[in-house]
Amino acid sequence: MKICIFAGARPNFIKVAPVIRVIEKAEEQGHDVSFSLVYAGKEDDPTLEGSLFADLQIPSPHVYLGVDCENLNELTGLVMSKFEHYLQAHPTDAVIVVDDLASTMAAAIVTKKQGLLLAHIAAGTRSFDITMPKEINRLVIDGLSDILFTAGMSNNSIANKEGADLSKVYMVGNILIDNIRYNQSRLQRPAILDELHLADGSYLVFTINRKALLADISNLKEMVAAILRDSGDIEIIAPLREPARTIVSSFVDQWEQSGADNSLHMHFISPLSYLEFGYLTANAKGIITDSGNVAEEATFYGVPCITLNSYTEHIETVKKGSNVLVGEDAVKLSEALQRLKAGQWKTCSIPDRWDGRSAERVVQILYERLKHPSLING
Image (tube, helix red, strand yellow):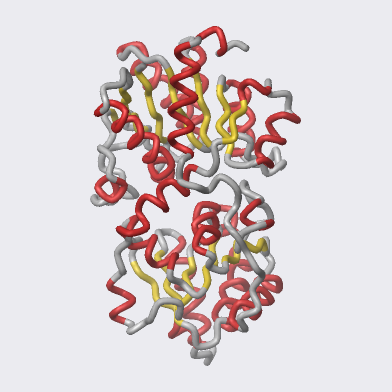
């Protein structure tokens, strides 16, 4: 069984790492299964820090397609062309894709044109906003996939309502949690916490990356002001990438020049390694983010999380977990921060099937489907 695992961007590696570890273990035990890890981007991609693959305990990609461009349509075409050449040159039984990037959609299209089995991890996620490019990607990827691996019942319901055959849908749980459980004892305390003499549970973490949020300058300025004002004297650690760091730091400078002194409590640092960032979020007093992945990690650790978005791909982080959605509303953000600071956060728990065994289910199901190819078409 030859499996191609496709990654379109850094977050994808975090979600496929558990699958890779399961396959490697199966290989060591003598099972007839192997994998190839293909990355859409370049080998010198600055988002892939040198320690990433060692932290995840997986090999670096076997193949880099070398695609690097801003225009999504151009990117889609380039990935399709290069991935097609890859599949034609490398015998493959199944392709695993994850999440909802343009490169992921491109890989999905090529996989089906080559007549191969396509499996989608994190299937059934929807914003129900067709103006979002990622929503189109999700619809295409799920529509083409032979196997839909979902994280929870809400994702199952979406897939079923859209007409997916029940035999295609498998609720394997949240694969991101496999990594968290696997690496829990390996997390590394970032140096910044010691430099600032911060104890665990005494600081906030702030991350932001979403282009739409960064583009609305006036509203973002209000939201940053709310964070500075309502965090009080709590230190804020902000490991931001560009251009977010430049934009947010300019607001902080303006806040400081206005005579307020809370800006001194926001500390901008370079992006951390996977294990350091995991420690930072796991031991925070609270988190402010626009990342669904960070909200999922916060839910697992029971850390209060304020998400700067009006929807989440994993509603269980809100219904059961520690996540609260405030959209792009500075007033709601302020109210949530005040509750967090006062210790009045909601009671939360870990959602179903966040047991760290999702990857085992994925590989077992793939193995069974490939042994019985008649099941692939129902």
